Length: 377
Image (cartoon, rainbow, N blue to C red; front, side):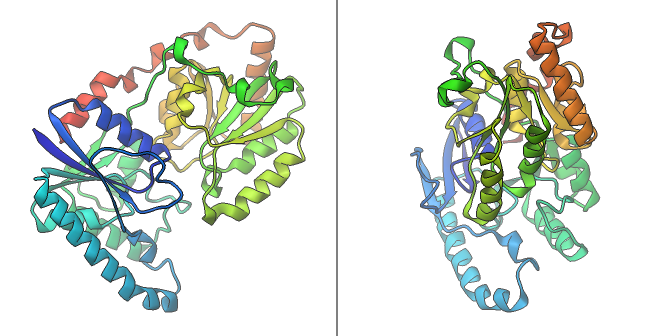
């Protein structure tokens, strides 16, 4: 039996959901353990064989802070990391771990512990590393990042062609990189829940256009607000689904204040297991252009909900334009395509190509993908 230790930050969000999908699908020939970042806010669900450790976001300290702040914090950071690495080494030895899978590029402790014990290490890179919205890219940072990833990983896992190309550009060794799409859950129609049950009663007959995910600047929720502000059809309700972190409090408040001033927008916060509701949304708008996969876009399409995404993003690899959704160039194009599709829906003349969307999503076939994950372990 192969034993895997997964290292993940919080028990929430797309990375966490993807990790749970993998772990729940691997089968009985794998014995699984989990390490999560200590957090009071997000540790709501209990998971067997799990530990909470003080893992640190090392990438923020590669020139991201002021020199004074960095020098003051450095001794404490190093000390905490040493303690965490020792604890991880104890876990790895006691549980006879065969593979350590760090499910984020932000944490270094698992990679060091695995290296010191000569245990296989898989490093999952879930962002586009050359996009400055996610990663403050410069020559020094890229050199440090590339050196660490090449030196401390046996396999570098990514989830799109765009992510793979960027890893190659900064110098990650090609033979280490493995591209596998995220596993995506499909809920049977009889088990699907209605998003309208979470909205005020006066909106039960509206066409629901939603944006789903963290309310943060990288998600570009302000574009969704601009769309709602310019959209005149009273039969459409724009819904913002998601929460924010303390770091994005100011951005969240600016979004909320503006949403409160618009009659055609509702904010309903975080929804546990949003996949249960996603089939009852009429259209998904995905404004973020710096994600390396776009889990909610894949989930929407597999539940027969078209998505509108921006051209050139990794997310656009998931959408078959004019068949499973629309790939747009700019805001004007976004507004046009949404108007077009809403007119189709109102007139009951939706093109035949938008029926049975899931038939076009073979690249997300669960059985094929889980076999690829089994193979890398």
